[in-house]
Length: 225
Image 1: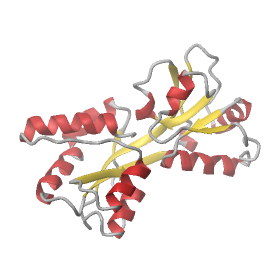
Image 2: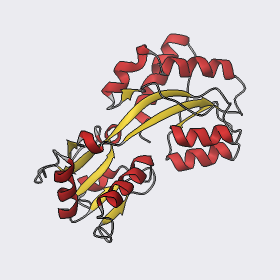
Image 3: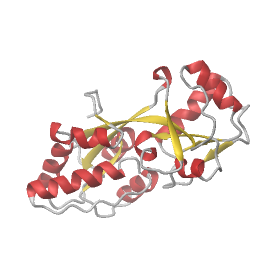
């Protein structure tokens, strides 16, 4: 769901440029990976890079077709009008988490990484009963806006379009970044056209849309073949 807004915008831009209609269905990453692995017919999939690599390894996404599209960082949400805790450093954030009545996180890769951070800090046990995992496809920020969660963590792209919350930045020392990548599905009858679309999504022409939606162009990095 983190890429829903930016993919929709880039799909529209590609339609205008190439004259080829693109229909994107955005669902939770776990569900998306399951459906591709089950052989449901799609031209391409966009997932967290490690999840996409698993689909490549399983033969569901074509080897060599992976294109890194965006890097997505995590932000912190509190309810609008509430007191904003100090999260300016790693130690300040740790204290803010311990002081929060409830802490929300997602089912996606950023949520997994956040729980690992709590474990590294040695506070996972202290948070038992206070951690709230948002259901798949439900923004953590919506729970914050309704007052169900005091302190919420999710990718910035999933928070910036929500009403009723204030957004705080993660300290650089503990920033959690997820690279989202696209690949051509084995079921696609038009793989070359799909490669052209993915190349456009990774091109400089797409950078403004990515930043407008709270993401950054993906940085070059090593990857499995």
